[in-house]
Image (cartoon, rainbow, N blue to C red; front, side, top):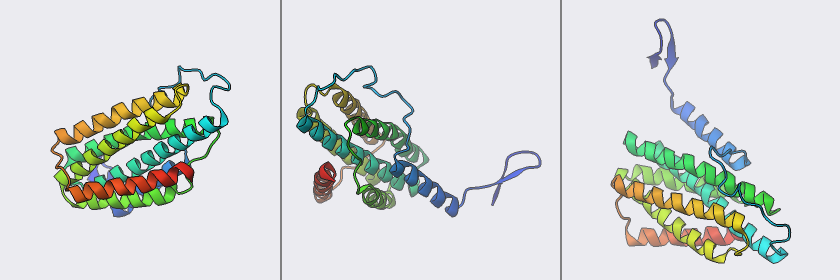
Length: 223
């Protein structure tokens, strides 16, 4: 099938192979650490005093920011997987817009991890593949459940970020500024999903999501 774009020109409409290649390209960009934020880092106006964090505090902050980075890896994969089979174009756009904002979070976390002289999770390809698969399943479940999955994910992420704001060293104003901005936007994503008709997921599903999240955060903090 071709789509006409001019009086004598035609452009082939994207097919399945194009979509697959597009998803692979997105995954490689995200996993390579080359994702670029479209907005300024919320901590760019802050100056970190040399020696503000001791070795133990720096390692702890790096572990938490690595967890947050993994969370953004999962969010990218999840929303892109959900969008693949989403039949409602408006909801699909909601998912893709959320994914776009999460790219900024991903880049900010990556930048902070480097500043803390640490590394991204070595299990990122695993996190991405698993989350994309979950997203596809959610997308196939129907629009309301798809949005419900988004709303519950963001709710649980908000809870994680709350705990990180409590746990991060008080003097680590840079990490705290990034986490605070992320938290604000995750809350917005949750509200957006609810406003578009998100259906509350069954209790066993929510519990399973919390269990998987616990496994992810525990491993990502260390590996």
